Length: 131
Image 1 (cartoon, rainbow, N blue to C red):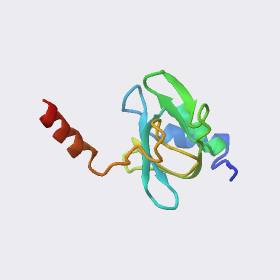
Image 2: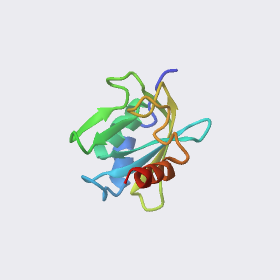
Image 3: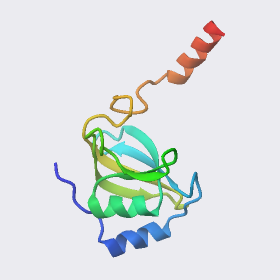
Image 4: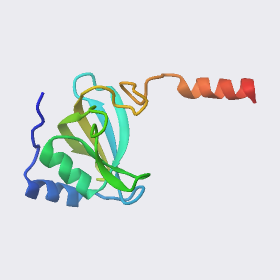
């Protein structure tokens, strides 16, 4: 499947300028969903440049708050996200990106960063057992 731009550079900058970058390092929160199943795959952060790159290339780009730089999802792993839909919330400080996920979305190699339904409960039980 081939990535296609969702907007021209001018449209992308207009969209990026309309968002409110008030989260970590001046970013918006990006919730990423599988376009077909609606499964939440991951949550990332986007600055204005990541938004513009995402909209003009059709490939998901994020701002890494730890590495302090823009990164193309899949640039090292090959696990790209082909963007099919990009929406902002009513406040303009969060976006939902619907994608076709190529390979794993999570850095652990899992399809989703939210694989386990009960990971929090399991972690709590483990800490109580070993604490």
